[in-house]
Length: 462
Image (cartoon, rainbow, N blue to C red; front, side, top):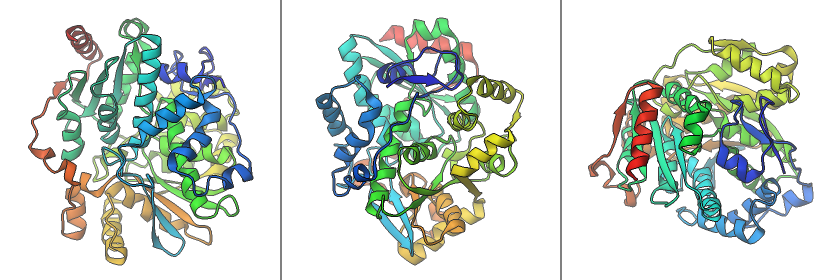
């Protein structure tokens, strides 16, 4: 299995090489050269399996010879050992033909744990085998950072630096990043928004002298292994509702497009998916692009669903790559145009995108109303991101079962939940002292040179 860049001008890599590399050297994102397909019989055979075994069968074709079967099974066993639900990703019914996929039972209470715990184990195994050390730099709008720190804290072969937008994450999200005491993790509060964090991260990858000097690796959803891990719960949930013998639909609250792109990969693998619904908050660039064909940045507005406060959705590049017939030059041209604030998607590419995706938007008022209505009718408490998904899913309910992805535990966003239902959700017992723990955080300017100097200084101290 080989991996190629969405911009067509970087070396082809193995799975392990692509995982450790993150962003391609031409600025593109790695994708499989071919998408393996599962037969209907293979999909049906996932029914009743443990999550770990289902994950092995879904992901194994993408791994190639990077890990042996025994190595990969051991990695999966360690990956999900810290999840606090036996099903890992349980389904809850919200109403007729509408289901909620709870993805918040991992160590940091967010769907990012499914992928981050996996690549933490993969990185550790591969780096030990190679006798190498890397520097991981990540950008986060909230949940990726805490999941990355939890996955890599205390590891011998990794230094972890997480950039988050100062004042634009929830208190719990910030505390999860700033309270770990491990010497190899560093929380950096950047002056700016998430798009600034993501831009500085890409700048570091594109500075090859710095990148090679610190052995830079990435764990944002630009890393293909992150996307691959998320493919699994599309299969397990769909099979629970009758796939492959009947179609299912998914509504996915998304900002960076990684989680819903995983659903697209599941569909390409043979999972019978009817709709993939992109659910956005008021920072609705993806919805506007699907409606008009114009991908135009309009600035980021802070919302009660901060993990979706994004205007540059990195993984959308992967969808564009396929929509343009895997023409790397066309994608590179679009990304160059985006530097000026916008690009227009061709008619043919829009037709291809609309064959797989549809979209919707939820206002702040609609998000709060959805939290309130869902609690009143089912007793289920939604985080604001999950509520965006549930609201948008409601516009597409039909005879096909709809699964909405619940991306975070409501206790990570207590202010929004309290506004909606008049009560603050409790943190799980193992996190209840979180707010009292001392913080370790460095406030940094939105300046590439300053960030690079800080990172090199910290590495030298270790």
